[in-house]
Image (cartoon, rainbow, N blue to C red; front, side, top):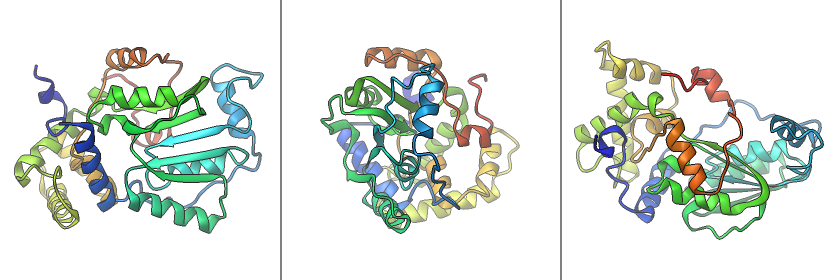
Amino acid sequence: MNRCDEQNIELALSPDAVDEMNARFYGAFTFPWRPLKFDRALDPYFEADMLNQSIGCWDGGVVPRCPRVWVAGCGANQALITALKFLRGFVVGSDLSAESLAFCGDTARKLGVSNLELRRETINRVSYREEFDYVICTGVIHHNAESQVALARLAEALKPTGVLELMVYNRYHRIATSATQKALRLLLGRGGSGGAGAAELASQLSFARKLVCAFRAGNSVSRLLEECEALPDSAVADTLLQPVEFSYTVESLAEMAEGCGLELMLPCVNVFDRAWKTISWDV
């Protein structure tokens, strides 16, 4: 099977080209949306202690209690959420979208957060070397032209004993999503969201919303679209219009990690896994 048949990667022509597409895309659709509330840790060392225990380090010797943390591809709020967890640490949040960074920075100022620095930069071109105790990159490298190159940059940024929290899409959970993204690109013409500006992206979202409301074929795609009905616009766009999306099996993820000098340690269950019941890798 041609690899383009099973994933949405026809537009993954070069790292720079995909970076430009993603900067426009997430400039138009600020993702994720602002949560209803932000939690601030009462114990400033709690998150570091729990992270160490999760990886079997009971003496706290892997991730220090005042860590340097990099949230790579932080979007509109992940870096801020992380800074509120590690109040005695220092957090760097990187993203391509100036709009997402401005959104995050504005919220951080309103909350009086001072242990956070936001930087507009691409993962593919950073020069960090053994700088961070903890790197968080969830839902990012699979939207890059060369995922393994992006992962290698993350690995280089880690200190020798550092920990990486990584999330990539499960191949078997993204079959309908990738198929729908590619179908919408054909229906929309002109390369779909690949070269679109803000006005055209807004028009494409309107079209996708109409499809969500009208398509009732009783198949896997219609079930996906039904799930999108109650989602915010940015989530609908991220699900149905994203221009580039790789996905992985356990084997292909392990191979990519090994190629970057990383070792898979344990699964990490996040709030989206629980909400969407995608904790298991089973079909």
